[in-house]
Image (cartoon, rainbow, N blue to C red; front, side, top):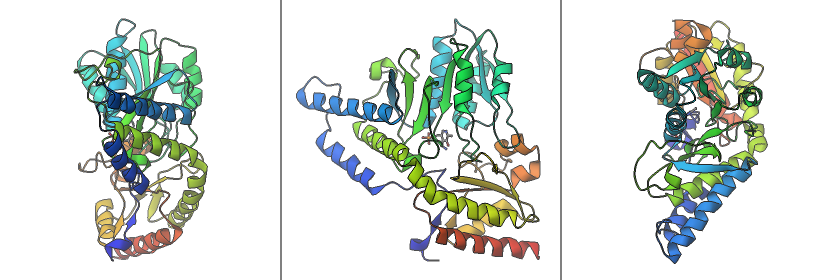
Length: 382
Ligand code: PMP
């Protein structure tokens, strides 16, 4: 297949950069290249532009009394949220709550903290990948200082009820609530008024890699994880990256503002793919939920073929999907997310993640289905 006709269904790993964001990046670097922390007019201009980025992000979510800490991406934002809280509030307690199916930038941070004496409760998801609010209630202890949960799971698209969990945590004002919202922004409705810390990333919403932010309720204090010049009120040292902040804020407000419109593009793709997968019960097992779902991610397991072989065969045809999260795809281990959901090693080993964007079309999906059907059919018929 001609490369210009390739079909990109790996948008949960990263998305195509919108050309207007690239233009903006160049424009800002051209016009506002001064260091916003320097003591002159050009710096002041850059600093004011920086504040506009923060306002744009907070306005998009209708958040008041929050601030934005710009980071090198969601990985850093998750590390900062978790380490920053655990270190700053250690006198309140040393217990935290998360789930077994968080992104590695959350899980690995907690694993490192366990070695430093922090006690971590890992909640198990149900068969749809959802963490029930009741499980959160049961895990709360007197010394709990932090609950960290993702809004939308990056492998299966499962949605946690952040509103309900946030309301429960309002009854425990000493517990800080952190939400990794990377896969939720622009995909589903996002209401974070009961959330203290929100992680976002630019490259999942057609912005640039190496850029993200931690949105923080103003009264929350964080200990820094990077030491340096004390920029961003000491919470994230390093010269401010105005061009990336501008792209992130544009991409963010555009994604939030077009959630409904883009969902209308993506939903028919999801429906068609799911109905195809369900029509072949001997070949496929659907891992994404049929009830409460995010249409951008469809995860299924192959019952008769090896996922790595099928993904490679699709790739040769110019169709790009993932076996599991791109952050773990190098390892041969089964997906820890699917293992926690299904308790079935085979299902967890042979899964495929298809993730859509506003740029995908039904024609592409039909091509994908016919190529997939042929590849899996050949394996099935020997
Ligand atoms: N959290 C989630 C849910 C993600 O999907 C990702 C990206 N795979 C990250 C965090 C890390 O994002 P970044 O690449 O911006 O560090």
